[in-house]
Length: 122
Image 1 (cartoon, helix red, strand yellow):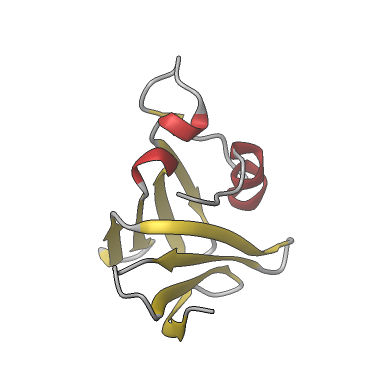
Image 2 (tube, one colour):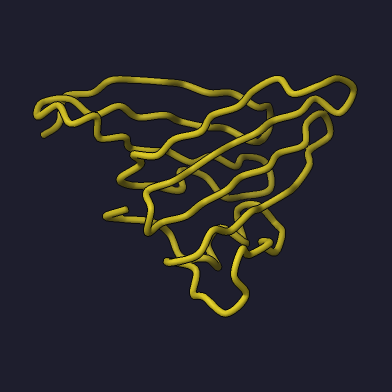
């Protein structure tokens, strides 16, 4: 990824310590898994900045999995909101098209929501 928040920023956002694939590797070259819950959902977020990889699995606490994304071409992650009432990130996905970039806004709190947009690359 060209641009990605630091591990401490994700710890603050998700309010949990990540499970690391390799305890001896730094965040940028490792796969970190953040597992956390809200009142209605359980989230599992896997981030591997070096490999441009991001995955998100969302499970309703009363039912089965309701959402899954597995992305291998994330070029940038931004934290949009990080406070008690609102937690959200924005993913930038380069599809190899010169003029457009896909963005995915993921809101974790107050209520889970995903917004997918294709935007003109400036």
